[in-house]
Amino acid sequence: MSFVIIRTGGKQFRVEEGQSIRVPLIEKQAGETVELEVLVANGGEDGTKIGSPAVEGARVTATVVDHGRGEKLIVFKKKRRKQYKRTRGHRQNYTTLKIDSIG
Image (cartoon, rainbow, N blue to C red; front, side, top):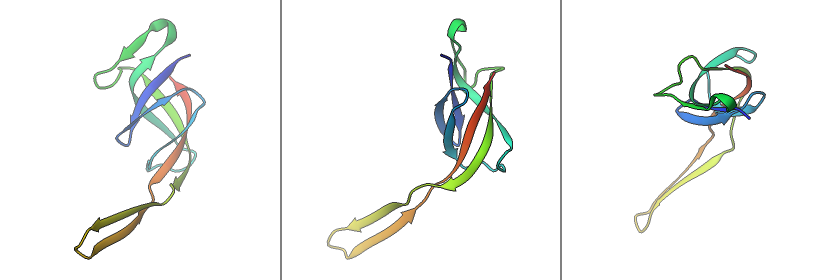
């Protein structure tokens, strides 16, 4: 079983071929392909390759499936005895990717 660890949007994800993942928003249209850098590659017989910062020659190709917004998070701030309360909502934008190939 081979997998790789990729970085996109300041976060790291463990992915395998054929997997769908949600990553922070990528400015591409649905149906376009994206190449992502590989930080760690576990190739089975080849062993594990760790990049500094990325593994040279290793690329992950993914297709943009769609875009969306996550669940609403409530951010509540309060300072006791000061009559201060603030309520805010936040929804994070995301992109759904389908991993096509690991090479």
